[in-house]
Length: 308
Length: 147
Image (cartoon, rainbow over all chains, first blue to last red; front, side, top):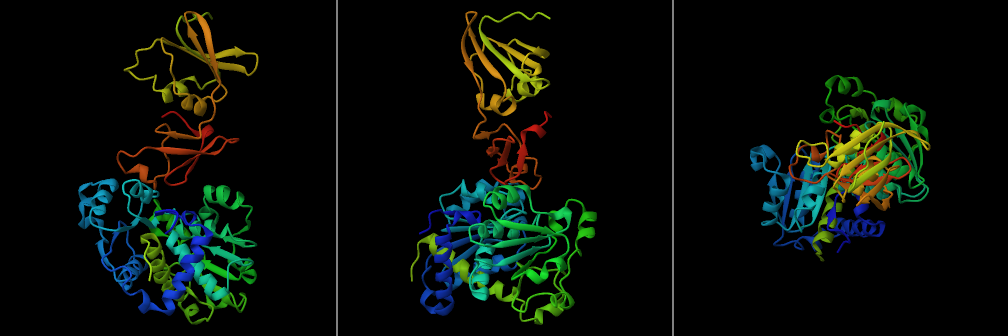
């Protein structure tokens, strides 16, 4: 079992617990049949107040592959949320029927409200521009698998660093590893939020630098983590239009990168990675997506105290 | 200018000049339902700070020291009983505050969810910064204005 019942951000898991999750995920990948019935009789509620493809489907697939069942909604307008029900009341209702809750919400901190309304395990599947801890598990497992580990790497994070919840969670998690150098690449309007800079990067003594141009730092990187400029986070559409094409990674730019650099992206992408890059052997984003299901299987098992 | 002393109540002295109204607002004393007699002295001469505000609240012995610590950390709260100063309290910056500050992040869950407490955690004592428990937005107390 894990120390915390609520996985609202990556720091709710210790480094040791994350390592256990990665080891379990790798065993599940190699021996899926061994785990096919560990969650028999268990129900996961997936409450998605905001659109999702990968996260929702990978949680669903994870639970089904463990032998459990899934219920929930992917469109809050088809639930009592539409009638104005509070998060707390929805969670109390769902707690009568499910064993574990997975929640995505456009409002930042919503999963904390959910966690305070139930004794069931709660997993934050993304809250606004805030945190996305299970994407971080996916990202770290991808780095472990394709770079052999995290320590000593130079990792570039590019795009929307202000509202990019996957970036915030990943930086938090990376702050606990030794000799990681972070290169932050963003337009000045989308720099990292103050709480991440001050409470995470500066508090941990992280080695970080900020850049405006991707080309200036691309040759130094072991990992390039691209992100989308997210239309849904802007209150002013003009700002979105002005910033959406700020970074586009294409085959020409990839000539500057190391031959063994990996490109990651939490997806979905719009046009920040040109399609021609998909054929580059350094493109890892589709492999990364597959990792997501296995780490979520492992996390669910740990939270529910299930064993093969 | 002469303002009478009070027989029983509180004298909040050494408030940074210009902050008396803000303090009263956050203490909830400035409402129409208030029953206490309140004297506000603004821009009084101060040997230490040059200028200061003073607030006197009659017939009141308790006060939310977390609010005083948050809004007027430099102040001194003097408790008066039967014309005698019985206690002098120096406020401390509270480790957390509940339902005093509001989160200004429009994406924060507190902007839409009903009936949840507004919780802020002390983030940086030197710069007097607090962090929203839900969305991590940082608020510097120097930027807090009375609405």
